[in-house]
Image (cartoon, rainbow, N blue to C red; front, top):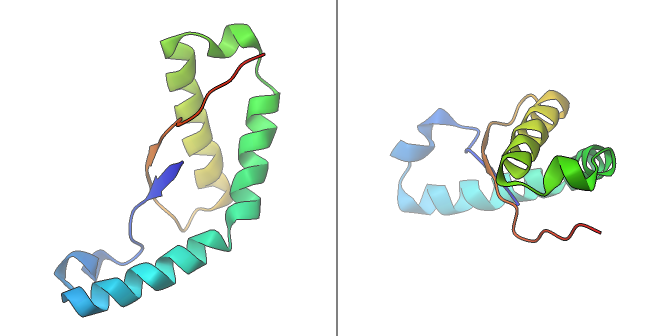
Length: 90
């Protein structure tokens, strides 16, 4: 799971009604980018071995690499965090 920052710096100062509309539009916009994000995730993870990923440091490295790769592919979006919610290594 990837957490993105709102694309508008004025977001924090928007009235609640405008925030709701903005978030709905922003979510739709990010959702349209899912194929790009999915490709980046699959491409990077498929290049990793068990030894690359089984330690806590390996998972942290993966988070950083994913963040960097997605930022390269979607430079107009700012990533706040990458969460590894499920992790299975065979």
